[in-house]
Length: 567
Image 1 (cartoon, rainbow, N blue to C red):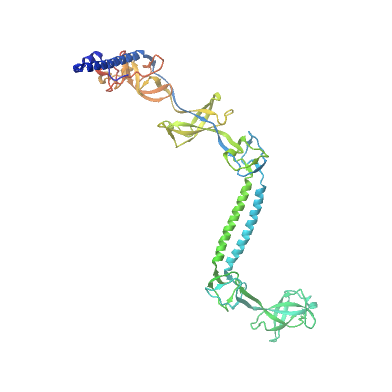
Image 2 (cartoon, rainbow, N blue to C red):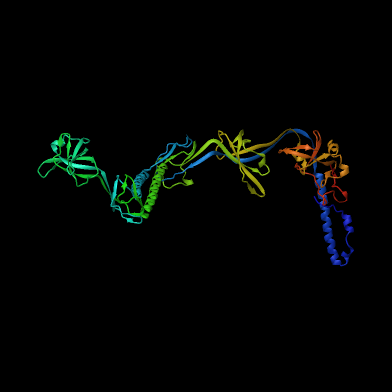
């Protein structure tokens, strides 16, 4: 095809006379011009030959079904697939499964010798126990920074004040309880056998010639010998202090009808030294010497950076020991390898008696387990079609390995991330389908997705569509009057040249498939149309494009054709 038709005769007349002014130069110019004219003549003849070689096939506009399908090819894989890899080293003691077995999640696959880890667990438990004991002792030290009374009584010799440094083991005061006094008197061993704890006693105060009541609170099990050779046992009797008794007073006792062998002395029911359990600086004092205090009363508070820091270290040590023990137990779990999913054993790479030397790598997979309850594959969809599909849409699946069989699948995922190559972007979609006997992972399948369908649609062969919106129509076709009424008024369709006896009709198209295209407007059922068929049997559009988008210069059409009609 070319832009201009050139008449040789007119071209010769246009040769300027001054070309012959210089003989040599004129001869050269004539030769160049002759070559150009010869090329133009050859091009015109080639165009005529091409046009004459075209044949046109007529067909009738009819109605039928049109289905738009998106197709693609993918590779089958299981719904889920796991490589079972070891996390520990050691000898395999058991591997109770085989390739092809169906197993459940949690089933034992491999049992590995764990004797070393068991020893590690014992050491970790011992370490944790030691750390806890140390932490407990230091925790007591923290508690000891708060000094409390062990008994109720009168605080004596207590001279501690805020800011003092107290050392561990220092006696910082005493608590004496004078409300009760304990009389210790001797009884002959013979008499003591007839006494018991809780028995009432009459106590004769020798210094006051007064008798008060008391109760037996203790009878010693051992005996002693008095200065005069008597064998006696000491009996302790607790009495309420009438107010004047001290440890210097003496008394005798009568229990029932039995009298003590001699006199005894009194002691306070409570006389407790207050001893600092830890060292620290006094930061608070709540009582003074001579105050009456109750049991568990807070006497003072101290602080100690050393004790506080030790407690923090103990806390860290305990947590560390706990983690070590936990890791040891988790490590023990790794020696029993179980199936992570329910499925089928695709591969078994190790057996009982084998030794695992190294830890997890893909190449050291002990087994491959696949969930074959569903089969999955991906296909790529062009960016122009991706919005035509949706999740849940049905897919027709075929496989070369299973000829003459069709299967159903469903779109389960549409990726939002596309891949661009050579200016075209495609998006992967995932299709799932039920398992099929004979369809194994790794096999290739073909997917067809119906995205549009018209039943009883007005249609023409897709080969008859020219430039996306034109159809070639014989001049005697009924399409002339219905579509091309304004041809004579508007002139030829811009840029289009039709063969002799034909013209172009503009149409509005709908959906299409590999054979047909839907006609929405411009043609009617039963109209005759044509399309070009070259001598080799190939279909092509017969369009001549001029330099101004219209007819060729001088209104000449290629031989065998005529100026195209317009709408």
